[in-house]
Image 1 (cartoon, rainbow, N blue to C red):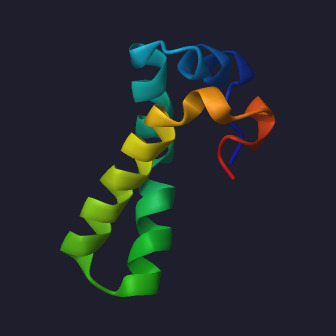
Image 2: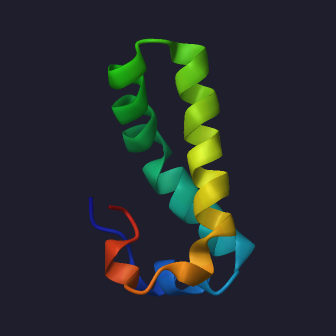
Length: 70
């Protein structure tokens, strides 16, 4: 998945709208990845949400915006 570098840069700088757009663009991929591993839809939703919350909280520690999705 290719994300807009400018959108990621803004999201990492704390622009909540930009981060929301990143979440909207990547939610499905992350959710499917988690669900395939735990086989529990509700728990997968919770874990996916937790993943994005953690990513937002730790955004300042990401050194390479190009690795955001990974």
